[in-house]
Length: 136
Image 1 (cartoon, rainbow, N blue to C red):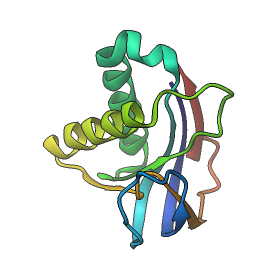
Image 2 (image 1 turned 180 degrees about the horizontal axis):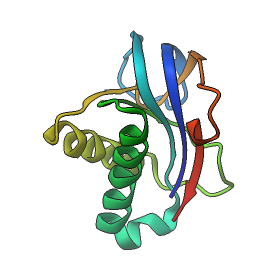
Image 3 (image 1 turned 45 degrees about the vertical axis):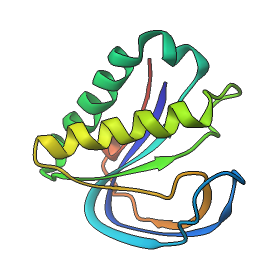
């Protein structure tokens, strides 16, 4: 699993086109303020420790959110952080489970449309900690 996390004063997205033909039509747009934006790249080996990967993903989001005093997150499917990708359905389900876990502890969570390329505007705070890469 690879995560690229940002603290963003403002994040906006709009689905542009389908990346996966089988993805449902979901051409929505969304906007969040004061949030943690997480670019999520699931890898084939993540299936070997799905529970551990899920737990570490949620802990990293909660940790960074705590540093900036926010309870808002955006989970963005992003298969460009490595050369090997987990099956799309695995990534979709993992992100859905991460969302559910975060919401169960009081987070407001948005996910970008599964299986779509998105246009986005990402504002990133200037602090060093506002930009974090995690691999596990």
